[in-house]
Every structure is written in structure tokens, then in C-alpha cells.
Image (cartoon, rainbow, N blue to C red; front, side, top):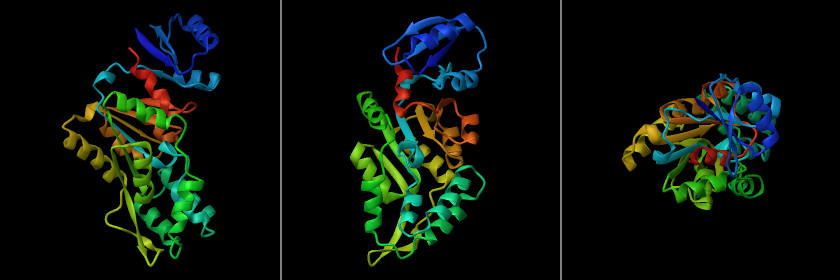
Length: 273
């Protein structure tokens, strides 16, 4: 028998689905579980009810989770930082277009990052602070999810093809254990239009997940990885459970779990016993 998690407490929706698919209904505080022997197309349910539905995975043990790794831009936070920085230089439409194509997997990430960062040359570093304080917000449920993981002694990390200025500050503000991203080169208080060191691309993100597993002496199947764009697919594939959060079509197709309507805290539903 399969278990479907309805990430909503709406009893009326659950009753309709139970009648259609001969389900046993189990009510929890934040969600409803539907147990059925029938095959159910979850995409159809998601579109009809505009609610998140997921199968409870058979082969993943939520009680053994030891690490949570999240992409930053448009996943853990509400913006693409580089697009907002570019807004101060008058290049937001051009940069946002490149960002979108890169996240869809249409462009080489490294080349697209080099091209976008070059457009930021000459900007005052104070712009970074303005983006962080005026435009950046943690996505709904993000802080609650991280605090929940703390109660379970689950380590948390953010990794980004964006910039250390934001990942490091975010990690401090919401108490993440680890952070990694690209470092913007700065001279005389201005961005030089290049980054320092190797680029944090899809391969580097996956390597970071493996590195953290080695550091904490845990296995990859104890890791939950969440992302939204093509640059996240490789690290999502190495973790034990992959979550697509308000993601691009290519990511939705490959993830174990899909959250497209609710907040990041919908992941907590899987931990109820």
C-alpha cells in the first residue's frame, strides 16, 4: 500500500480523493496522509487542487537524516542575488535573462556567470548590503525548517552559484552550519567584475555535499538536497532524497519530492511518525 502526503489539512480535498482512489485517511496536525493500493497521478492532483502532494518514499529513512543541503537563490531565499545587484547598475533585464536561461539548463553555467559578473564592474560594495537588507528574504517556512532540523540534530548547509557575501551572512542570520559560494573580487571598495578562485558550479555543488558527508562521517543516503534549477541537478542526484522547490521543469521531472505551492516547512510533514 502506498502513502500519499497531502501537504494541507483540508479535509474536503482528502475526502474527495479518498472516494476516487479508495483511500484510508489519516489526519495529522499539518497534513493528511492517504493510504491506497491504486496508482494515482500526483501531477493531476497538484494541478486540480493547487496543493502539494507527494508519495512517502519507500526507500528513504527520515529518522536517519543527518544533513540538509539547500541551494540559495530562489530556493532558500526569494531572489536571484546577481539580478538584484545588476539592478543597481542598470543591467537587470540583461542579467536576469541570462540567469533564467542558465537555470533552465540552456547555457553553460561557468560562462554565463563570468558574463554576468563582468557587467557588475565598478559597482560600490555597499550595493551588496542594500540587496541583502532591502530585497533578500528567506522563503516561507525556511527558518522554521532549519530550526526543526536543529531539534533533530540535523546539520544544515547552503551552497550557491551566487556569492559568499550572501551565503555567509544568511548562514549566520538563520543559523546554518555550513555555506559555500563564489567570492566576488573587490578592490578599493568596488566590484572588479570577476570572481576569485574556482567557480561553484554544478560539479562543485555535488562535491560540497560529498565533502560534508565525509566531514561529519555520514553516508550520502542520509542527506536531503533541495534546489530549483538545472545547476542543482547533480547535487540532488547524489543525495539520498532530492526535493524540487518551486522549481524549473527539468528539475521537477527528476526530483523525488516536489513542493510547488507551499513553503519549505512542508518538508517537515515527512518526519511525522
